[in-house]
Image 1: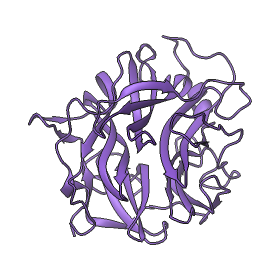
Image 2: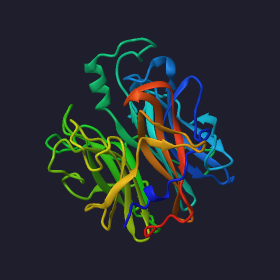
Image 3: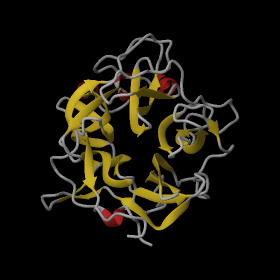
Length: 349
């Protein structure tokens, strides 16, 4: 069996997706609203702050809209406002992932809060403060009966870190949830044991999307013998009686990782969301992008995969991206791009 995502990628519309003048755009999760239009939830922060640590202090989640899945998407609104610092997500929100089930929209994300002044444009952020605030990342879940809101924003994180001594005692972040037909929800999240240690993925389950969530095992999933193999940016879904996942191959020290292609997507399946079968041909997408005008580019980054579904089948792949000569060295904007999938996409294609 080949890779069901890679084999069904179509050329990416060069004028598709979501861009905003004056802003870095990251992430990008799309759902069809009750109005029949397509609504993307994305992260943004002003370009004048730069792409480095400032995103952790000055990011917000926005909604953009398009008549078609490919876009281009037009900015509609900011979803959350900053609020009193005692809340876990008071000053920064990032990494939205939107789902719809049983008449409700569920917006998973992570947020941060921190002490001290909000960094200004051009202000250098110390490594100590960066790490301190980074370790305050917590998963949240906002809900709404309408794609237009209002969104009921939580007072407390959806999932807290565990006590020191566990692998996930620092943060909970980068949530991706699969809501089964009966409402049972599996959520993959990211954490690590201490600053500088390897980021890893865990799984929690709840009887309903809003929780309460219980971890399914003590240890993380996707453990590799080679410590330089590293995966992140999960996108989880349930289809045809099993779990499916896309994750970024973020290997270190030229180890080659799972795909041999840094930044590429990995496709895997599971029956229990714990034990994963990585495809024999694991590469789901790469930084080498074929555009609809016939040109090709190697993107500096391809991050945060998200799929749009119609009738339970994936039809469009969304990715955070940016141009540049090397990873994280962006020239111009970053944006959420889209790659349509062939209509015949199926597990046995």
